[in-house]
Amino acid sequence: MTKIITIITLFICSLMSAQNVKLTVSVTGVKNNTGIVKVGLYNSDGTFLKTTYKSLSSEIKNNEAVVTFTDLPAGEYAISTYHDENNNGKLDKNAMGIPSEDYATSNNAKGFMGPPSYKDAKFVIAKDSKIEIIL
Image: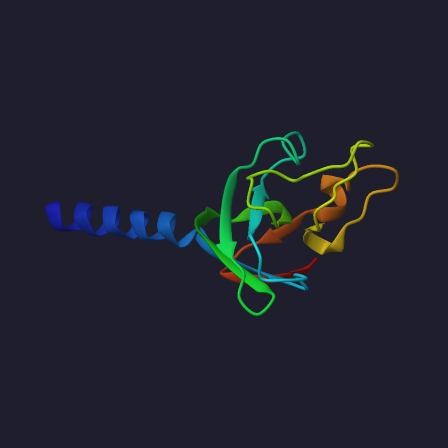
């Protein structure tokens, strides 16, 4: 009986861990190798471009940066990324509030007279995946 319970427990644990995925994000089109690229991962419309679910940064090599998010529950996400050229930890903006550093979102979503929407930037991952975002 103990063996059966142990086998069932291991089976359930393996199913639960199988739901976690890895997402590799390749950011290309970076204009130079100065500074870093910041990548923010969002998991809801309410937090998009406000509070990241997870965030990573990467050095730039050959005008490209790559980050990998691990242990993500399969589901719906959106990404925003920017080239922090002066390495000050924030997306710099001009006096009008328009970003002065290069930025992009997943699905190449663009906003009209404002930032892009979560609806346009969202994507679904169910298995280990790789996406490319062009600045």
